[in-house]
Length: 288
Ligand code: C2E
Ligand code: MG
Ligand code: MG
Ligand code: MG
Image (cartoon, rainbow, N blue to C red; front, side, top):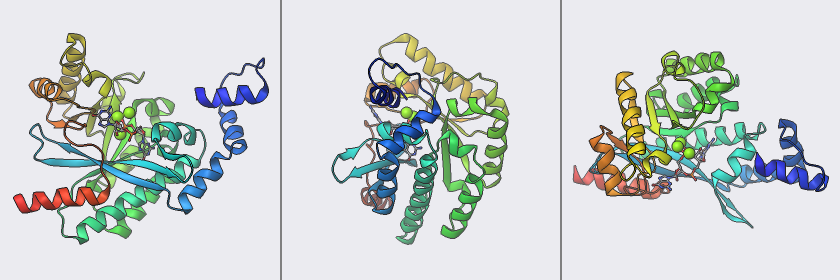
């Protein structure tokens, strides 16, 4: 949002300070051709998915994967989702991107299955705008059916901020997704501003401890205490817990001693292209 506001303010002249308003995003995306570029990326296949394994402490057992989008821009090179997703989220472009991610993930899963691999759950990130829209549930239901993927193999990650917008609508949609057996995770848990009361109102499966708490969990007592509290909260509510952004053995050991059982981070695996995941899963098939 800050970036958009800055573009907009510059465009209007330096003296004309602007506060961010949603309609500015539309002005900016049109003016700077962002929407054209996203549409071009969609039709020309410039988006790709990478997948990051979620593992147990010894890294042997792959419990699931998270699908993460990449944009291979023909002129600008690789663009991080942290750059373009927030801009896309200001308009309905995010729905097109999210739909591309859902379709591509399920297509990839059906491809892996055709290669004889055992199916493992895959998580996708969804934006709030898409979550509360009427089109999400029918879209997902249709894609699960056409790729013949059980809903239980798909997980949807949303951030706490999403729940702030319209909790009643979120309860409705998440309940419908649960009806398809889809799993629901709260991403970046602990960084939002929402109250804990939503945890009991929503049909959740997993909390993902944000990497900002993981980063110094082995060196700062406060961070360790926060991780411990989140892990206990999850246990009491019978939710799964995943630690994100685990980069060292020491962080993994600390988290394991606090009761964490599933880990995601560079210490174990970086996000990888689909063919690398296939080799990894094949290797596991041979070993077991
Ligand atoms: P996220 O969902 O919280 O994803 C975790 C991010 O942390 C990913 O960055 C991942 O590559 C990175 N990461 C994983 N392990 C480590 C680690 O050990 N150390 C560090 N420093 N980083 C680690 P990425 O792929 O750049 O994605 C950033 C954010 O962009 C995601 O955060 C998510 O909010 C959003 N995003 C990514 N893909 C999608 C998508 O397909 N759709 C939507 N709507 N948002 C997406
Ligand atoms: Mg995520
Ligand atoms: Mg996260
Ligand atoms: Mg994040």
